[in-house]
Length: 194
Image (tube, rainbow, N blue to C red; front, side, top):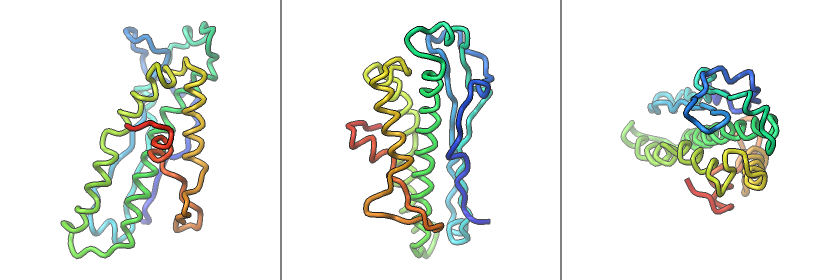
């Protein structure tokens, strides 16, 4: 079975948010998204059997629809776009992790220990990064949980760039499509580090 990245593209709808709202939270909605980090064994790399899955956790994702509908400053669609950003950030990190792991396929390793020397820094780079970026994304100086139109627009542009802009110099995927610029590179270019 060839290696696979699953769940990169998902358009959220309010009906996806089925969890019980946190009454103590001042937030209007919460998006729970995660991705699996596979155990990278030499045999899985050689046999092209590495899978990364991005998962929207519907039962842990919630919304306060009555409060969202009463909001004057931001529309329900704008608030949902902010929540989409949470999903997209995690999805892009998972994509970039997957691409880095796939680039190891061209290397020749004598044993698992040799492979681990290349895998460890990749996993360390992404370990906990999504939580740090979620917190940064929501800061008052950034999107302010979607309340800042300027901050939200900035993040929307960065997310779009990571989804659509080819790497330079070009790096091609096995299917012939150009890999897109890593999210962490886009963020760093804009002064944002996890």
